[in-house]
Image (cartoon, rainbow, N blue to C red; front, side, top):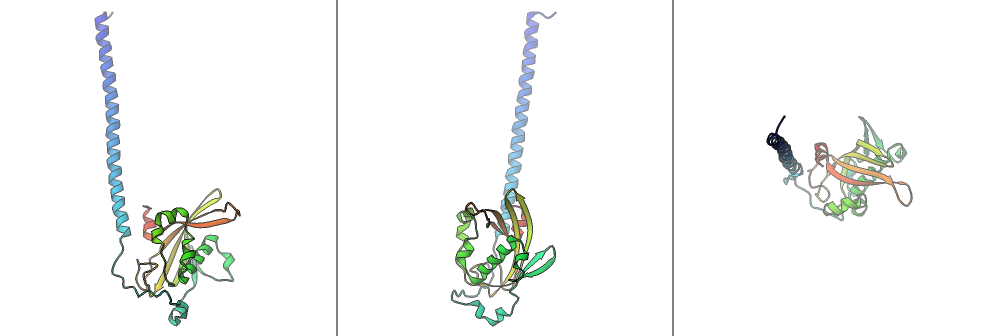
Length: 229
């Protein structure tokens, strides 16, 4: 049987072992935390660099002189181009017309109106398509533009997800701008297509109950594919 001194020594040893174990566990948590922080910092740094690369704008485009009084519908050459709005449904491409208008999803019809706003140089209507949050954060990007000679327009729903009464979708929009003057798009040159993605949110209007569609985000297709935004 252990005497009192031996019991005390044994108790102290157990206490030291317990304290050592606790310190080891705390040390492991600190190390894991530091490693996680470092890896997260590296990841964020790399993602910031990738975002910066995606957001770089080429400065070599030669834009035509903007003319806010020009009516592009008086330009015979432009009127001879394919100004139709096409819908790409898993590879099956159709033309949206006034006759078959009701055959298409609401998101596509919404984007067809958006194309018309751009073509008509209707800055007020174009700005109204965005959510309040988008205007608050990126309103400086929404400035007046002239009528835009869009052609070769194609719309494609590339993502859609519904949660209750709310539907989030992404529409890929591809078009060319003849005689681009840079007032609407300064990231593409003459007869050059750079697809963009309009992320839409559809939800019931609080007053009427009808579905209202707004643009919550606007990205280039490359930005959208990166998953960084």
